[in-house]
Amino acid sequence: MLAAYWLKPVRCTKKGNKRLSLLFLVEHIFLYYKRKILVKCRSMLARPLTAATSAQTFARARRHWHRHQPRTSWWWGQFPEQSWSPSTSHTDHATAPRPPDPLRWREWRRPGLFPHSVPQHISPVHLYSGGMDRADEEGLRKRKRSEDSGSHGNWQRSPKRSALEESQEQSPVWLHITGASLPPGKVPPSSENRGTKTELKREWEEACGYGPRETGSIRERHFDFSVMSYNILSQELLLSNAYLYKHCNPLILSWGHRFTKIIKELEQHSADIMCLQEVQEDHYLKQIKPSLESLGYHCEYKRRTGRKPDGCAVVFKRERFSLLSRHPVEYFRRGIPLLDRDNVGLILLLQPVEPSACHICVANTHLLYNPRRGDIKLAQLSMLLAEISRVAGLADGSTCPVVLCGDFNSLPCSPLCSFIRESRLDYTGLSIGKVSGQEDGSRGQRLLTAPIWPTCLGISQQCQYESQATTTDQAVKELNLQALSALNSASGSDMSTGVGAGKDFSSLLLPGSKKLCIEHGLRLTSAYSHYLRENSRPEITTCHARTAVTVDYIFYSALSECSTPEERGLQLLARLALVGEAELREVNRLPNQHHSSDHLPLIACFRLPS
Image 1 (cartoon, one colour):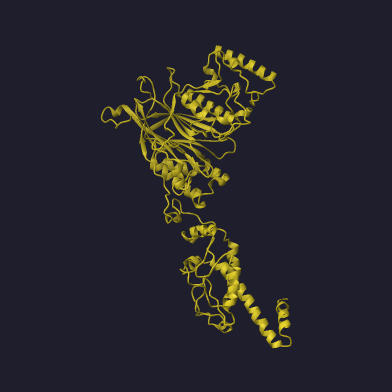
Image 2 (image 1 turned 180 degrees about the vertical axis):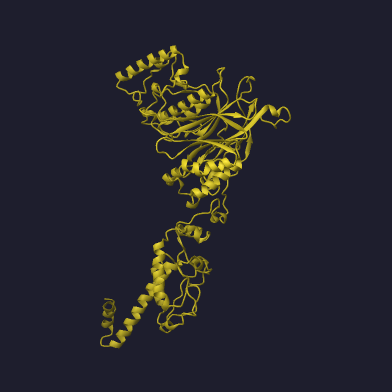
């Protein structure tokens, strides 16, 4: 078929001259195969190794190499002066240098093999034949003009393609091979050559009104300790939400690299108490817990219910505290549609080593993320606050100091965070999408109903277990709820789903009150101001491809200036400053080479008066 293809135009121009036709046929066949080999060599050798290069491509290249290598002793970039012709096919291959094997790593590492290491005045592939003129090379350049415009000596790349190729040229070839793993704790070398900022600068801020620490007998009256809250990003959640981390180098997202960085970060800060969220259970049992125990920590863990692989952990230094009791909280309740999620909390009651110091109640949680289900978040929070009130309660009716940490998936100005700080929330006419502050518009969203959580949960509107309420109050609330249920049924609404929530039933639910509200008895304050001191920009605790906001908090029982010696509370001494969105974008957001989670750790130092 090939002979007929080439003989047809020859016969039309050289009729009767069979010898000349045969020579034209041989020359055309030679040029055809030579161009084919040239294109194959360019695609096989001239391009840099990328993540798309697979094992099948290498195997195919190796078979092609051994098929053509016995007849050729040239090699690109090594012997530009050597020519290829029928006479060179009898070269002594025992003495001729052999080209590198495509699947032998040591040979590929020889200098001068890749196009970005060859001087620009040298052509990437050197093939020459006496019967081949530069006119044929011009034809080949025209076919390659979409990839390489201009001459071989000065390649012109399109802006979109050049950015990718330049980033590959600045990093070693092994960094772009599929399956290559970064050694644990090592930073990708490519980031070191770009001259960009990769590590955040965070400084300690002293709390207002806090002076130098006392010495001598006065200092011995106090017990100072530090608390950390840190969402370390579960590996399973990272993989299931990979679209949030498209800006990251895949090598720094491997668990081997992230685990080494996270443990190093925890050891560097060395907080006395650490509340961790999104701790994957298998990683906790095999790696995180043994590593922290070797650093002198006692570890407690609660996995999420259902089939969720992660949970919350609270760890503390054995030399500073002893464990009095452990109280896990599960927010899932079978048969209650409002509480069908698998989030959890964990509460520890700790005794400081200082004999005269009182107990400390430490709580850690990770609330539901869904921005449109503020009713579920409030119900989960009420369950946690009710358990904290029970655990922290003392015989005289007061409570011991409380530290509440976690990822609340709510903004600082949201009604949910205001409820924690102000101990009261008026939710009359409040839509469920506005509770966490994550949703801008509330159009089409239903309003919160009264009560927010069902009475069968056993938690009052004061976020306490019903057993703590008096019998009279219980009876009055039961009658009010029955009347409310009757009105809802008459109006065709469903109290559990929130339909008809726009009606004002506050007079039936809470006699003598004009507004619907919930309350709690804990006096909690945020350890952070949520605005930067320098320019009043918002502080950021999490930053990935979609958002940069504050959702992590450390709340504590504040000791007010007018507190009596009998009152129990904590004094904020200092905190590790957060950063703004601009600083996070300078380091390519989170995670990055130095910060292996999409959240930043929050650390605060407190003083517990004796």
